[in-house]
Image (cartoon, rainbow, N blue to C red):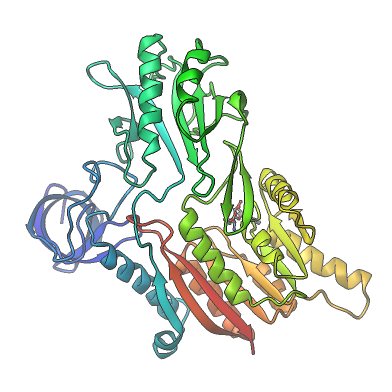
Length: 462
Ligand code: SAH
């Protein structure tokens, strides 16, 4: 096929980014917004030798799984990829994706997976789950100030102040800020000429505490008439923190490096289960608190702690899992590459009165092997051991040196939390070959309407 060719395609699969995949005479086409079961007319936009990308022109026959998206902008927005697919089907697709990867890449027999895989953990209400939103501010063609999102792969702002994945409160906050800007002649930022002041608005909402944080990212140092905006925003129920983040760089990075307090505290508090977290505008924090509790609850259940165990939490981030585990373990060691995340982890440990957690900054592939070697040196004839090791690596999975050291530490149980089931499967294969047995698997839907899926696996020492 070549550019501008037209084709009728039956969609048979979903790609990693949520796009539909179908074949025409053996040639594979990736078609955004088409879902499994659709028959669509598509126009080839880009053609490679064996595959190409096509635009959906018309749905010739809609899939029985197709639903009316709740958001009118679902197609244009880069945020959701599969909102047009019935939620039950999204879950089935994600579960199958995990299973397929474990079979094909992990070489785990299907019969075993049929037996041990637990049902995917979905959401009862898969909308309004995000506790964080970042809206770019700009002007529409008529010159009105707007908040919205970038149209997929561009920096054109599509007005939308009520994303259906975010909380209802976002809308009133954005409208308050826009009205303040119009009345006080405060310019939105214009990327083209690097002029204007207000770039983005970050809003965070504590689902448990109902505390709200608003942070304006500005191309400058001061917000003129800030007191007028503060007066309006402070009246919104739950408002806890109003801050500025100066960012005058020509960059795609949204947040500036620092935070300036305008009103209230410069952080909010929220809970996952009974662990309390202090969240600043720059902190990392899981965006779906309802599912985070279920995901980490599953990890904790798989870890099966009784109070005495030595546990490692590798790739620990701000220590969400570590602090969860610390309540049931003897001692927890967290490892993380980002120093600020470790600062947050330590502060959150203190906030919760947790004294049996210790954190190391560094690459897991250095920290873990170094710890092992050091221990051997200081304790002749002995080896560093762990009872349980939890890993929650980024998409690329664990480096082999990490897996190797994990195996040497001979934990009874390894709990693998993963955001990419392909690298998970690769690492599971390594662990199975090195004395571990796959015992439990559960997928978890942290990001409904997107192509992502998280998985928790329990591996036990044979
Ligand atoms: N469980 C964590 C999130 C884990 S996400 C939480 O809930 O906060 C993966 C983490 O691995 C990120 O925080 C990332 O900064 C960290 N990371 C990435 N590469 C790493 C490496 N080579 N060594 C250690 N940590 C790494």
